[in-house]
Amino acid sequence: MNLRDLELFCEVAHLGSFSKAAKAHGMSQPAASEIVKAIEEKLGCELLNRSVRPLELTPEGAVYYDGCRQLLDDYRRLEDRV
View (cartoon, rainbow, N blue to C red):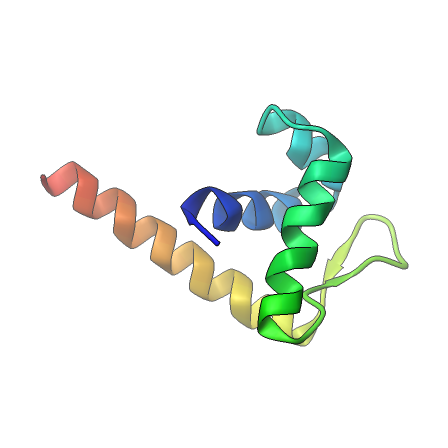
């Protein structure tokens, strides 16, 4: 897992769509889905409710999303400081 994977997850959560997030990141929808699935497998829980459209975060997904946003924001601030 890397920062790009976390950015992709956040984009999927924000847009509620693998297809839209994949397009924004210049990749295929199946590739985006695989990345998020790998994150879920590593964490041992589902982050997205895929049975509704637009996609919705699970309770665990909401916690993870908030943490990822904070991490990504901190990283960008660090880059700006350097």
